[in-house]
Structure formats: C-alpha cells, structure tokens
Image: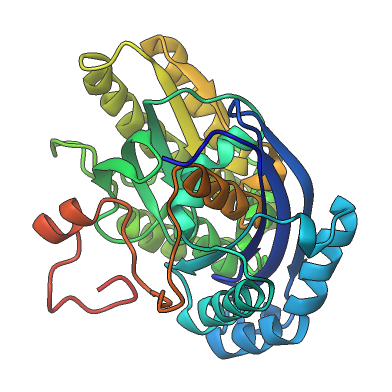
Length: 362
C-alpha cells in the first residue's frame, strides 16, 4: 500500500467514439476533485446509424493530443504536476482503445510517470464518486449501450457479478428502437425526448425472464417487438407513444431485477447503497424507476452527475488515482482488450454467452 497522499492523474478515454481527457485529484483523505474534463464526440457516424470502428479509431488519432493538452490547460497544470497517466485498456472497440493506451504509454515513458491501464467498466463503477461519497460496499447497476450487469462492489478491483444481460444491453434496445423510428444517432437521448409526449401504456410489450431466478436481464425480445410495432406507426403521436412504451418497458425491467437484487443484497450487508452508472443512467425514466425501487427496499440511491454518466475520462483518471493510492501500476506491455469483464472469475466459470454463439458479445 502506497503512503497516503494526494494523487493528480491525467486520464485518457478512447473506448468508443468519444475522445476524452481529464485531470482528477484524489486527496489523501479520499476526497475527489475533478480539475478538468474534456470530451470530443465524433460526428462522422450519424449517416451509418451507429459507430463504425475504423472511423472511430482514425478520429481518436486526429485529436487525442489536442484533447489531452486542453485537459491540462483547463486544469491549469503542466505534466510536471501529474503523478500518473491512466488510460482505458478495454473493453471497447480495440482500434480506439489502442490509440488512447498507446498515447498514454508514450506520455508515461517521455515524462517518467507511472502508467495505469484501466478497465473502462471499473471507471463507470467508480464514477458516482465524482459527485458524492460512496462508501464500500455497494450494489451497482452498470447499464449502457454495450453493458448491463448487477455487481457487488467491495472496493477497487474487488467486484462480484450478480447478474448480466443474456443477449442485448438496455442501451442497445434504446438505440435500435430509435433507429427504426428514424431518430438518428445517438438514439437514446432522442428517444427520451420523443417519449416525453407519448403514452407509455399504448403499446403492450413483452416482459422477459419473469419466471427465471437470479438477476439476469434480456432485451432482445423487447427490441424485436419494438421494431415490429414501429412498422405500424403512421403518425408522430404513434411514434411518441411507442418511444414512451419502450422506455417504460426498459425502466421496468431494470428496476424489477435491481429490486430483486436489493432484497438479496440487504440480507448480507448493512450498508444499503444502490449505485447506477453508465450512459443509460442519464435517462430520467430509468432513474425514477430505480429511485422508487430503492425507496421500497430502504436503499440510498446514487448516480453520477449527468456529465459523467456517458463515456468520459474523469472516471478513468479516478480509477487510476485509486489504483496509484494502492500502489498498483501497469507495465508498458499492458495490452488493449476488446473484452475485459470486471469479475473475470465469474465470467470464466459461468459465461453469459457460451462458446459457439454468434454476435458482438460471443
């Protein structure tokens, strides 16, 4: 364990289509200060209705040096005031991950700084601490375009998976429904805006895994039903009603499975804190449903500030600072990983996607 002191870390995030850099100071007493956070979102993917990996990687190459410089300028610091470099090493689109990780390695070597290769999901897991204190342990719902899982978080690098999606993630259901409704990319925020004027009870949609034990999720059936319903929409009100119905169905499943996990978790822990993180945590209907579940189960509810729900480098810098405080660093042989589960033991012992399955998560 390193000696308690302040750690100021430059974080780099390039796992998807946001090029981000941030400077975060982790105080010796555990307090967190975000000194800067700069995010450049790529606009080249809109015509394709989703992120194109090769375009994303080239976009990161073009701007990462300027984004890192902007983060340092906004923080009012030079590299001589930085204690370490933290860079996302996965999971994500491996071409983009390689850009940020390689840039981080170059900075670390050039300035003689320690490197911390960060799991992007661990960044999300800790992101609520960018806005408030979050004492361990806590129950975490990590929900985004590529991930949907419930985890017991006992500390940095100490997490157990309780449940995961068996097919598609909630954010994917948002985005694909937005696409068939012609809302463009990114779809989640556009669908939420359209849903505001819709009737959430208009379209009956399937409820997955009602008779299944455990805490897993499934959104493929909902996504298919939404696509079929979209083909029947004739007016703008029809589209708004379908958007509201899909949003309500996603929020319902997330809250029902999370509430079930809360009841189990409460029997094992006195600290009743529920944290939701990831891009879908920014959705108002999802937050409201989860807050209501927390109230029923006697849990405190915590979510990151909206700016830190979607991909950002502040959460990566924080994860790096936490690891530096524990004396944990990475070698220059750290590799970019397209797959990197938070609970590798559970992923190996009980994979949610069995060998031979096709698809992005196979």
